[in-house]
Image (cartoon, rainbow, N blue to C red):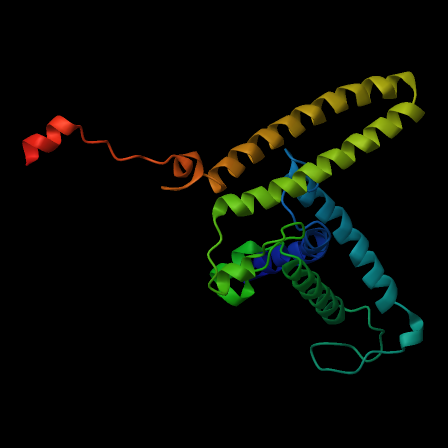
Length: 234
């Protein structure tokens, strides 16, 4: 019984303090590295815990509304003399919210591992023009092409951040200007890395095959046979 009680406590903490907010963050930011390139997972966990508290508070406000009246009388589940702010209704509401957020996150491509369960569950995150559903449909998509599409999306994000940094540098204080100067240098370095990798992928995808490219334009003339060689052959 002690083990069962401990498992119930752990499951309750996960449902109340983690899953609602985490699934919400996954639905809002489905692409990996969208929150932060280096500490993306840490941001998702911490924001998930914070948003979970907010979701639980909202659920408590709704279920604790006296206008809803008393809950139905179910033996061992709910007390008819009380409102809906009871364990069963709170847990059910949170589970439904978690499933809704999870479904939204799956639809937006936050869970690529779902394709391992069934190919029809494969979804690509926004920003990728070539989605994984095409691969499921039997169309071959090179990994380099998928990476190239992702890099294009990342490049647009970097350019957007550079514009924001330039705008804030103009309107900020001297300390803010120094910060955004360093920020611009970092973004320029990231942009150079992305452009370099995109050039490599472009060369790999557009590499001329045998009989193509410049070599295809070279015409090999047959060697002329001299008169002496003709006489010898005769």
